[in-house]
Image (tube, rainbow, N blue to C red; front, side, top):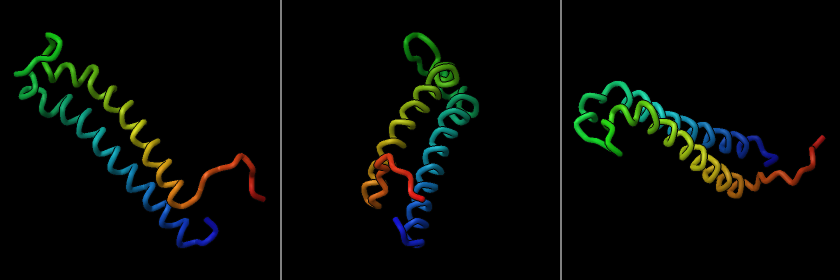
Length: 91
């Protein structure tokens, strides 16, 4: 990844991944846990209202899943741009 255009494309893609994943997390944690809680409370999961479950547990689970998704996407992006770190530092 020596060329400037390649580095910019890599970084732009990384920022796009971050924006989408953070938007998903925001939608789940804020949307499902706060905004739509009354509608979600009509359903139950494990005996608890679904809105309460999202506010207490669901957003945490989604966050952990999004971490794994980000790792998967970044590994794929690194392979695409051949940016795998071999442990050596470039000076």
